[in-house]
Image (cartoon, rainbow over all chains, first blue to last red; front, side, top):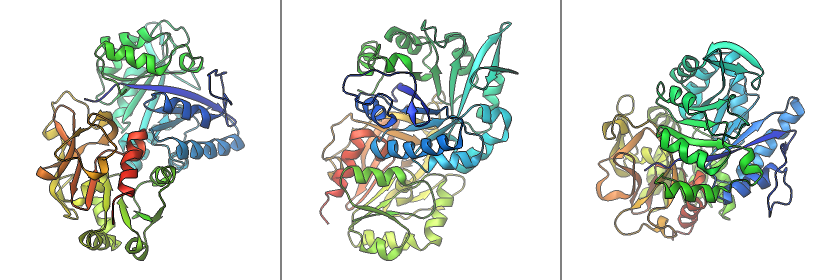
Length: 252
Length: 205
């Protein structure tokens, strides 16, 4: 039986992990390579690297670091941030990324998903959507959640999957950072219209939030979080033990 | 020295790195002389069967792999590389494989319940079959490995050395004497995957 995946997300800027991270045994808490190794050794099923660098120099540094990470750890790596063209896919895949996540790039150029899926396969293309309720309607936001595109989110996500996206990361802006649990209502709306893996993002505050997520929505495949893992509030091994106790299949 | 066969499909960075991590000397090459000189061969692959099979044949490397296998050289196919070792595939038409292992490639939708997602993607447990294969010498039944596939090896019969349960028992690995194939990705399966590659490196030539 396929297991539910637990995925830490690392934001990288100019070659360093941002958001202070504090672990015992990690000497350089902002080194992407050290942190990736830490998570991989401690039960992460996959890692997401998000490049929030704006400059070209920073981007080149990011790809160097990605190669270093891919040389060091051997679990699936997803890369997002600054992916606007097929050439961007090529750049990160050559460094050992397995999947590439697109967000604003797909909003600006709706053909990007189709073109990339045709070249690299559906399994390689992840649509990452930042979604927020506006007057009771789910809307897609661009530019890191700052700009309302006006597009209805559920049909947008479905269109991306129809165009070849093999996985959906749904980040609820409404629950992100609030630490009161994942956005089950929004996730269910997406699960009802797509038949590819759905990764829940935004809102995890404690172990119980993951248990609730997988119990309430068996069609959700993975839970993604950043700060609760980075600040050591939740250890992945403890989280998985608890999930297992609740009959949720996990890789131990 | 292990030759990772490069015939123009997929990215071999992680595979090469994983051999480096276990101290195995591996080169990525599309040169038939280098492949003949290597002690062992890895046949990788991602994408569509028909396209990959044509590239492998047109490059002349299919014949090299077949003749080296017949000489008894250890060969391991990974993901689509495993599928290519079989007799044929029904992925978008009908295509001939290398025929080094009995069986054919069919869509997993033939055998799994309709409500399960395709591809079969993620970590799944291996159920080891029969006498433990030498490539699994460091593994335990139930160890997890990482899968991404929509087609599987059917009718491989006694050559199945492991399965994974996804609504049905899907072929996870096959072997026939010196020829091995893994449907999953050892290079993305953490320590378990590295142990498989290590065991492959240690096979007697």
